[in-house]
Length: 179
Image (cartoon, rainbow, N blue to C red; front, side, top):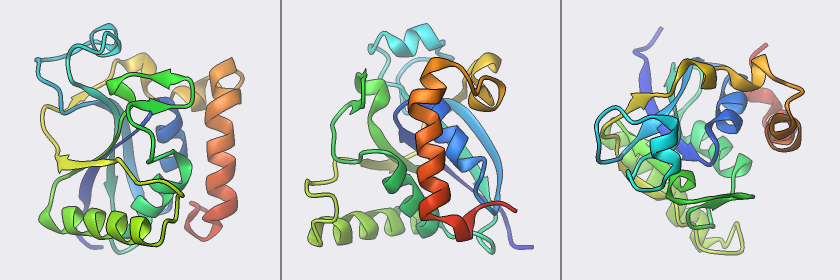
């Protein structure tokens, strides 16, 4: 088994992003949290105020011998809109921005190359606005946010937003789905 790596991704509401990456082969841990803000230990209400600079994120711990950084980022770009600034669907604010927060120089290189390539090929029809920065000030979200989709599959937001993202992952990346 190779050494595990960690990367943090902001793709809108963390309930949706978490629900997708929990199904990816080689991802050993997924935690909803807040990252790259300016205050200490933010609460959900603090982050939702839009005044802290924090982003709703998921922290992924993964085994690169089973799933590469590039594969994780390809999934990330398919299950959210990387071309909208501070917005994912009806979720609006800086806390919903698209972001890749790396922990190694190699992750940064992979992210930047993938964005360059996708923009050159006009893959999304618009320019990708995903920020690529080192992870700073990461804090886990409150316990009730963890595994939210798994615990609340019939909740309205989960059915309308998270479930379609999980279905899209399963259809597009079936070879990377946990068995």
